[in-house]
Amino acid sequence: MDSKTFVYTTYIRASPEQLWQALTDPAFTQRYWGVSFSTDWAAGSPMAWTETGATTEDPEQVVLAHEPHRRLAYTWHTFSPQWAEANGIDEELRARLASERRSQVTFDLEPQGDRDDRGDRGDQVKLTVTHEFDPAGTLHSMCSQGWPPILSSLKTLLETGEPLG
Image (cartoon, rainbow, N blue to C red; front, side):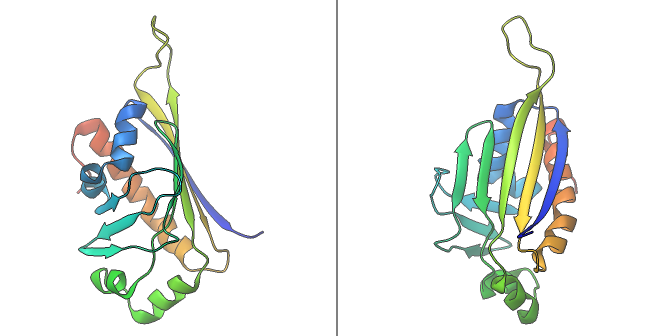
């Protein structure tokens, strides 16, 4: 086996368009995740990540798939010294993370519910997040603990208007 995989599925009372906006609009991602992205979201385009005041950019930090309201995938961010300092990560851990094969995350959106008389599905979406990691790496355990609260905050924001505290 050449990777470890984290898979998380949740159902969110929102339209695919609303969920897509929450995954791609920096104003949304900042609210529930504390991260904002700068990219045009076209497959192959570079992505800049800004988290706790540190912006990371790298030629391998790119959008992998962009199918509006259906699928979004990108490579994970670069573990730069600036990122580590801003997030309280010591140099030993940062170096270990930086030495791992770059991981990638995919968001699959599937409308759920009955179709109405116009043929549209109800406003509920099944969101499946799949994050693939280096099997020998440390990042898997860190992200496996991090994804559930991020995705819970996303769900809460879309359903109530406020992210988790």
